[in-house]
Image 1: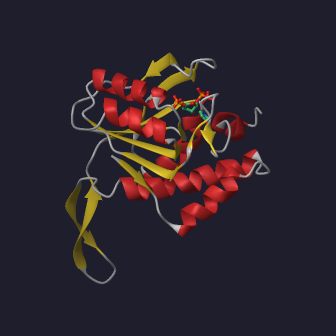
Image 2: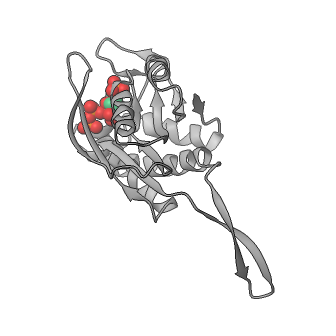
Length: 206
Ligand code: PRP
Ligand code: URA
């Protein structure tokens, strides 16, 4: 299921993110802020346990997150979302999947994988700003399922309808959270209006 964040603070940042005049420093800051909003929405149902806490005034109870979390950025653009995720989940483990689209066909070409094997009950959070044909996302989640992950969620910034439909067909059990659902893909499989090549804009390699 696809959830699109519907919030003025998200739309405001997305406008600057899309702008061709936005330079890498601001682009990275916006990616970080938007990722924290995505995490806030997507992780509402994290498991917690009750704990006792002594305030300066009284003893009370609070809750602590009890889930084991594995963050999985897809190289390379997914690295742009990692700091934000580690900021909100500082105790998370990190696994990495390297994936490069074939420029002609848009087929994902996996080139690296270093993800801890699953125990079974942890939550894997896959992060990649762009969800175009959905090919990279489908492949990443297929790899995680083969490693034994059963609880997976996907966070991205911009989604094309074609990618969302493709992903839903392959992994209907994996929720996807996005900051924007755009109009379509162009003939080069880029998202329209989109924001261009997210990796190039994050790393200044245009
Ligand atoms: C981009 C993006 C996704 C993928 C999305 O990566 O970060 O991984 O394309 O496209 P898809 O939905 O059609 O698979 P890219 O292959 O450009 O690599 P990069 O992150 O190294 O720039
Ligand atoms: N990857 C990107 O970075 N941008 C797109 O529009 C599509 C794939």
